[in-house]
Length: 251
Image (cartoon, rainbow, N blue to C red; front, side, top):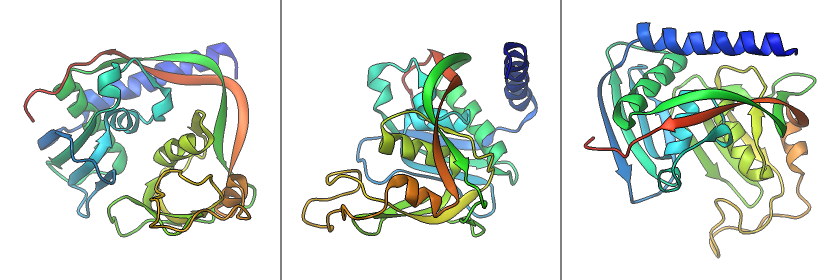
């Protein structure tokens, strides 16, 4: 992709952001509160498509989802705020799809946190999540249940109502590198991912769960069973840079 085409696509992206904010609806009512209790992180649009509920979601993840940018491509958050988690309960004026919900979440963050951002392009070595040859082997979610990630055993994780943009964030932790969602998949999916990860990883509780089996499949093999794969690339990566943000006041 040449530089002129990248600049054109960036302009189109920014215009889309602006048009969505100007002409899209906002949440009718919304509560945003700092979560100090911790627990499992979840975010979903409830059945009826009028309510968005997030529990214990890291602020960087909320920003990433609102702008459809993996959280490792979000920079400029103050150190203290980068580790903060929030609960959100918001209701729209009328039913909305996920894309519209994320536009409304963007407006909510800009309103409550006085968030200002801009896009930059950097050349980076990254991993890109893509659809493997043969196509996707996951079930698209149809029941609108709450997004959830649950450890089944030492090697298996269950995902419900999981969008690929958020799954890329999960995989970034697994490979300790930036993972870009290049699948082009717009829906959310139900699936189980099985692969070997070192003991003590995310979700493992000492003495409560069996340790991972070192003879289990690799991450790449586990993804292949879902019709996905990770590919290493060096190329232009869109970074979302936080220019200004303020601590939450009220709710």
